[in-house]
Amino acid sequence: MTHITLTKGDITTQHVDAIVNTANSSLLGGGGVDGAIHRGGGPEILAECRALRAAKYGRGLPTGQAVATTAGKLPARWVIHTVGPVWSASEDRSAALASCYRESLRVADELGARTVAFPAVSTGVYGWPMDDGARIAVRTVRETDTSVDEVRFVLFDDAAYQAFTDAMS
Ligand code: APR
Image (cartoon, rainbow, N blue to C red; front, side, top):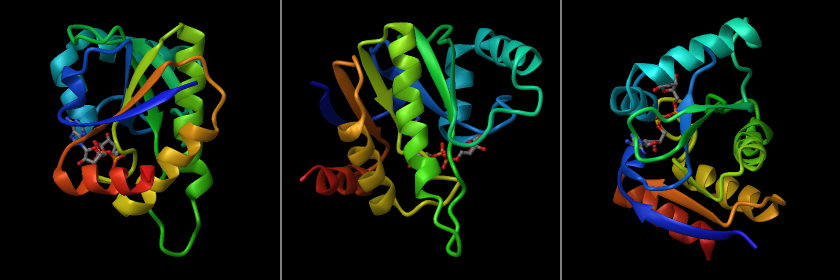
C-alpha cells in the first residue's frame, strides 16, 4: 500500500530515493523545478539527459512519458524526468497529466525506488489550474499499482499545499 504524504518545500532538498522533474521534451533544462534540479544536481544530470536524447529520444521525450537519470549532487539517488501537458482550455489533456504520474511510478518500480517525491506537474509554466492538477495527481497515485512505499507531494507554496490537502480528503 502506497502511503501519500504532503510537504511544503523545495523538491531538490528531499531525502528520498527519487525526485520527479517537471521537464520539457528537450530534456535540456529550463526554469522552475527543471532549473532548480539541474542547478542543484550539477552537470551529471544534463550529461545523462543528453545521452538519453542521443540513444532513444532523438525527437525529445514525449508528453506523458518518464525517464530516469542520476540525481548528481542532490540528496536523492535518481531524478525521474517527466513531460507534463501544457494546459488547454479547449482540449482535455487530463489523460496526459495522469500518465506523467503513472509512468513516473513505473520508472520508479524499474529502479527499485521506494520513496518518490513529486512536484505539482504542469501547474507552473505549463499553466494547469492547481486544484485540478492536484485532483489528477492524487487520484492517479491512488489508482496506480506500484511497489513505491511513499509518494511525497512537495508543494512550493500554501495555495498548492491547500489544493493537495483538499484533493486528499
Ligand atoms: N520545488 C517544488 N516545487 C516547485 C519548485 C521547487 N524547487 N519550483 C517550482 N515549483 C512548483 C511550481 O510552483 C509549480 O506549482 O512546481 C510546479 C510545476 O512548475 P514548473 O516547474 O513550472 O513545471 P511545469 O508547469 O510542469 O512546466 C514545465 O517549465 O521549467 C520549465 O523546462 C520546464 O518547459 C518545462 C516547463
